Length: 293
Image 1 (cartoon, rainbow, N blue to C red):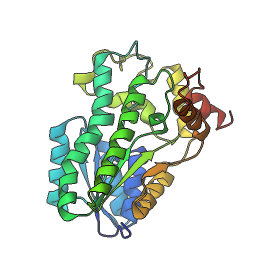
Image 2: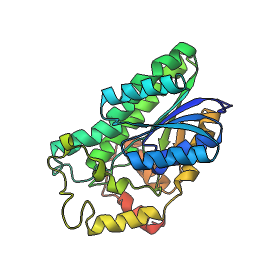
Image 3: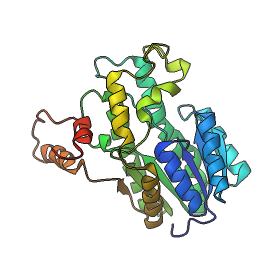
Image 4: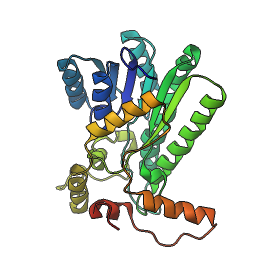
């Protein structure tokens, strides 16, 4: 998609982090942007900023773990601007904890947002793209979709699934000569607030979650340290520009940096040689070391 100007773009999780950076970049490139998010105040702020810079945008409150909510997002997009040309299924939550300890509601919430949110987004917006023979879908996976750090069981599961789902989608679009492009975004360490995503966990998924009325709220001491480390990482605005360029180039794999390349190669080597994996460094160690292993 060489020219983004005038195109209609939908970005979920668009009120903060990578979603916000991409919504801003798409608007700067001339797209009319539908910003979807579950949080109203930051959603309104992003729309106001886009409009203040001369762009065109609307905000739609959306819970991507709900098919009805995503279907309503599609209807809002078509009512305001028309069928979407670009869809970025980006909304995500952290989903930490050991597999042996994660309660079922936490699994359901993490899969609901990170995986079903992507599936629902494709199900909602792909048909009109196929009818028109054009469009581009960006699904946000992660470097965690290529690695298996302990204590991230639910998150790793969803991101591996998104990578496989998105690669399958790309093959189907390619073999069908549909004219629809696909990008799998695999962010490394980006300055987002995903570490505090518990603030948005719906009540129906709340059983077994942390007590947000606790003195420390959703942030324990270690989580605060991780949140501070995340704040010093890559600017989401840079990632937004990378996404726009990937759409223009119809590029499938988009890694935001190369910090985890050695860890990914190690895992691939184990697969190629059918070797039992040994104990590996944790992804968070890589972040704190700045890539120096």
